[in-house]
Length: 257
Image (cartoon, rainbow, N blue to C red; front, side, top):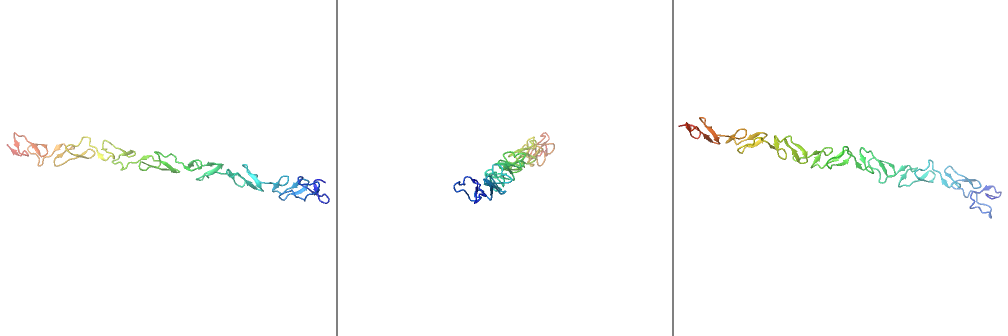
């Protein structure tokens, strides 16, 4: 009987391709694979790990996803350029995500955008952004050109040497002074609104320092005569007394005519 073998035709055959009508039999269970049993002609009973006509197809439970192939019982072979994991459920990012970024799809990193961005979460975030060509070198940290700027966001200009006398550094190397009292590149020079005369020096705002042996007065405008002029004589230049010549003469108007 076709489909059976054995001395009494009691053994079913499960592979019609290998059955030879001339010989009339085939070795029992020759074609059921992976532990399957031939239970009727061309009908294999498979174990729980295999399926298919001849128990040739492995079973993966749960099934492989993302186009993974079940190549052995509960073994998924994945497209490893995009997926891995026991079911091909884990996306692959190559290069890998940095700084605790998550690979959420093949080649796609999801970053903590309050701290990192970039295709692999490699770029730190500074909020507010760094100013004046400062570089964000780690989350929230700006690295400045410290010869010109400082501050958490490189927002503060640098003046070296520093501005003096309450001057403000308003741009790199530039001091803005209270010009009613100070000037100079670092606000180091006092201002005397009425210029000091007779080689007097403006030594603080509005204060002239005079050669006290020859001049005094707020602007060094008053000559000094030592000893002083007598008898209503006027000191008209340093050391020179001008006398009422109708009554007095002498270097200090001390001699009556």
